[in-house]
Image 1 (cartoon, helix red, strand yellow):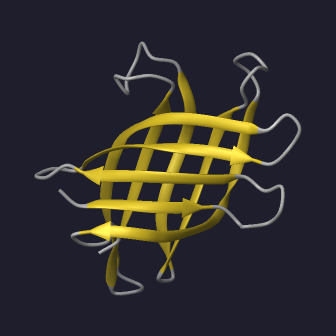
Image 2: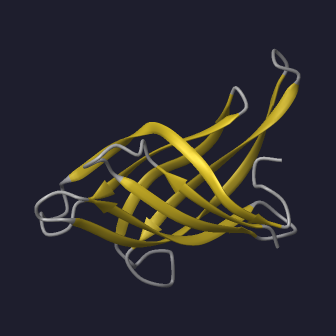
Length: 136
């Protein structure tokens, strides 16, 4: 099963950083993994999430190549599905002009269930992948 470790964020001081490890379950299009969202603010942000979702192939005729779009939801606890509480939503990793970008919203800890912080689109850097990158 291919596994990829990603670093998501703009790298700016005080910016949100999301480190993710994803595994593509074969055969099929199911993706699972986990990640940690951090931000150096007061109080510091530290959100751990268990991710579950799918990868979809999109054929784009105007650029003459397919792209893959991963769409995931993050949960506070295992199993990564309801009734576990959602803490990351609308998480998408996608290929734009041969580089990866991501967008997502995360639930800020300690502020109830309504303080969703949107992030993105931001750059995605592949830290490692085995046996092949997710975007191939």
